[in-house]
Amino acid sequence: MQYFTNEYINFFLDLEKNNKKEWFHEHKKRYEKHVRKPMIQFVEDLILEMQKHDPEINPIPSKCLGRINRDIRFSKDKTPYNLHLFAHITKGTKDEPIPGIAIRFGGRDSGIMTGFYQPSKAKLIDIRNKISENLELFQNLKTAKSFVSYFGTIQGTSYKRIPKELLDTYAKEPLIANKQFYYTAINKANFALSKNLLDEVMEHWLASKPLNDFLS
Image (cartoon, rainbow, N blue to C red; front, side):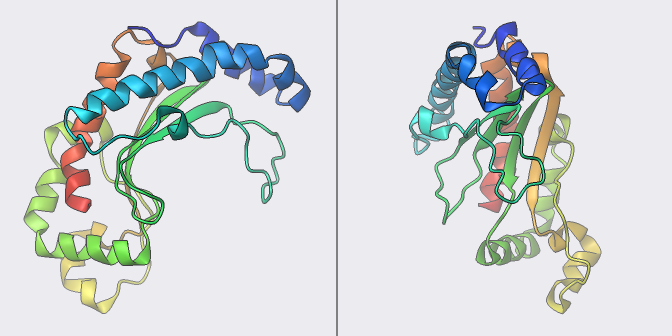
């Protein structure tokens, strides 16, 4: 099934050249028809597929979508709208995050993201302890063929100074110093136009799931 058409991509390419409230309001029906509505349908179907592997995943599809409006309060760039639509599906909460999957489809590229982008201090300690206690398993998960083929490697910033209690593990696994543990797959914009989009996004999620389960 093809969820998105060229109209989706063209909307964001046009928005890039006309990133103003007046233009957006003039094209609001176009946005609703070709962007927001098909994204909600895609997220709804994606949730149903994910539930086959984890029944606890049960968010409201429309609540998974990010806002098209940018938060410009602290930004030098005052253009009001994002040049993509973002959706995040998880069974976690803001206070107790559990990696799910995030998708971003725009006029220039498509992205699939998962893992821990901003773990709390307590969660980061949990992750480090889990890695330290299960180092071989962690290394097997991050080098698994399916994970590497879809995401490559674990990303994230790391501490410049390594805490003393982490030095021994750090010598064997430098990722123990990370502040973040996330992974991304960036594709061309027309990735979203694929008739196999649902299957392809599910393949990404399933490839990340063993590592996500470990970190959770």
